[in-house]
Length: 200
Image (cartoon, rainbow, N blue to C red; front, side):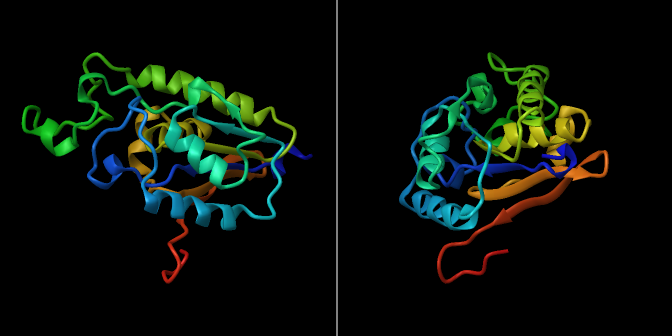
């Protein structure tokens, strides 16, 4: 396959009870809600007909469930590098609650105490970018919001902090690819809504 035709598909896991309320969900192993499972079914319909030479997933349940429901569970490789940011003492807390103590705080400009600095998240993302770029064909990656946003920034050669500019919803599908020799984003945060809603 011509490397410049390669696509890297990024799939964020479906809804969880914590994603609904904006709580930072790093290494806490939370399952999908019933709605999250329905979202994963929509992802399955969206990916139908697409063959991937490599499928990678975070080992955390919410990503594994999304990958399995989407139909790729039996061929996916589980990689610890795909786990979400380790939020340390901020695990389970919303940005609003953290800002009551630290006005203006965001995960992008303030390393979580007891957690993972953004440089470490970027190193993990770089490992995945290298693995995906060296694959012989298209790649699907099932993972988490903040991590995938860092990964996309690193794909583009940007600083990991640039991930703050890339909003990513649950059960969304995004595609990284090439335009000639340049790495680009060809689709971002494309959401397949549940039946009765429009897929945008």
